[in-house]
Image 1: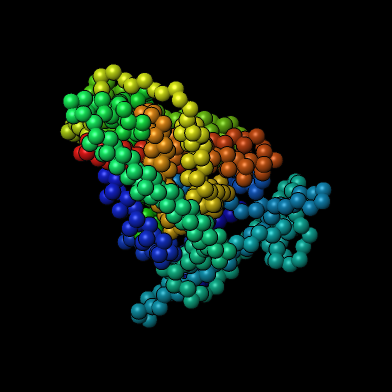
Image 2: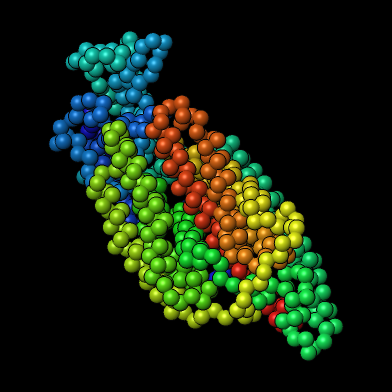
Length: 576
């Protein structure tokens, strides 16, 4: 394909409060009405100027693996006539394709003629001497298959037999310029306006998630306002009736509800280092997603430069490494274990980022071995590694220094030296952590199921994502339900005389990531399996990373919400 046609004419409560505010604003502001930041200047063309056209890969509608032009043995045009320029990081990682052919009965045909319809908005000259200028506002491409001989360019528009994909194929193109009343600032509206059916589906999914959220909120209110108040009243009556000489500890030991765990409820959990790592990483990912979606809604990432959002995502993840280190350090400090903090911070800086980078390197090696255009050049991988080691890792250690240097948290009740024996009595079915994870994770997944499937499908098919307002609303509802389900699960677990609630508070909402992974595989795996084994590998890898991000973010919210809840109820016990 040639290029270069010339133009012929021209903390938690505060966090939840901020989340509610962003939720309300994001749901009311459509993404297409966002403003654009300064610095994105339009390109002005004059007659006889060159309009650069470039392509670097060929995509498939049946396979997710793209091929570069060299792999298809397409003759390249001289570099002097079509310079690809300096692509951005995200332009290397992502691009676009258009259909190059079709299959009819037993023969394959190639679309060897491309028609460009270039719409331009003329700029009125200020003086008579000023040359005619124009700004391009849209380009439409129509492929066609025409069998023509070399030099017979004029006959490309006439009805001709289709060109079979065999032998030497002549590629041609035509260009039509059309004046347009559309101004330059509105050129993206046609692409960013959400279709009515998709908007209706998104609105229905948010409404369904809101109903589910209200139901969970009602259940939590029942637990807090009725059951919990009844437990506190029973404890107060029991404590007032005992002999004061028996002591406070004995009175708690005689209780049969959660209040008897006062001297064990803040006992450090097993695998405390790993819990601090996953909580810190989950907090990082939660605020990364919240920041990116909010920034897109308010116009900080313009669609004018398609790689801006992905570039911004890499930078935001690296910058929020400081938050990951701080949250991991503060969480580990809750367990009153000042020693061996280097292990916690090292794992925070390397475990999950290393997992993502290892997956990226492995997939990139597979793509490169198949000569796919989706393979990332080594220079780009070096940039990502430099961003990780030179920016993210130091920020993790910097945030951890502030976290470990903060004041030690004093629990409302002291932890006994000897652990309490766990009761062997029968539990209700909803008091087993495994059941709580399955049920709680399913409820959290029910809130995000529709939006998560739509988002991943668009990312998998490399389509435009316009539903940022709905995404923010769904993300806020997911955070609320994650916090509520974690609190309910922890309360039921404490009611069973089990003080091992730390991991349960995280795993109950985090288990929604497992459901997201299963749902994505159910939606897209059959089509991927029908195309190629490589597509299955890519789908499973991308779905795993997507689900892991969702699960860690939800788990961190649940952990902090449950910690605040446990702190509050045992502070009430102490005050009594």
